[in-house]
Image 1 (cartoon, rainbow, N blue to C red):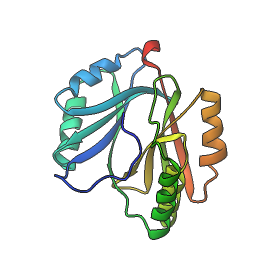
Image 2 (tube, rainbow, N blue to C red; image 1 turned 180 degrees about the vertical axis):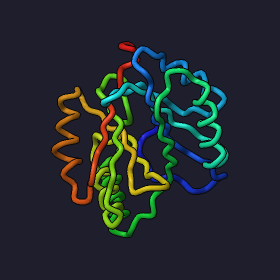
Image 3 (cartoon, rainbow, N blue to C red; image 1 turned 30 degrees about the horizontal axis):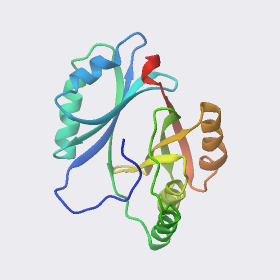
Length: 198
């Protein structure tokens, strides 16, 4: 699992996206993964919010062809409901936001711990006021429980993975430290279902 970091822009550009797929109750999320097996899957998780679903992190040659291929593949899978294709990119951050991130990085002499399977985790889709995107991004980046942070390439939205010792602690992080950030409009939280419980 990748940890949060500012992407290095050197090297060949590639499309990167998160795919949020609603799966009918009783349907097997592994069938969705099987349908997407021709794509470059970086990671995946079964999740639950109001619906049961799966989140897939993908890489591809370019955003448009990746989105088109994914839509065609999902159309062949029974039990798949709505899906959202969210291309991500490094946001254009202002100087203040970069300074805050760099100060946080300097505090972490040993680097980021990253995501661990032993902890409760959730995906967050965080809708943000456009004028406050860099401030919210840097605040989330400097939150220890946020282990992955990406910016939606099309909307004023951030994709984050948060983790904590259990789901009660995770709820407190979201409600007490993330939802209250000035500029956060809405949060959709999707709890990761541990693979041994699937």
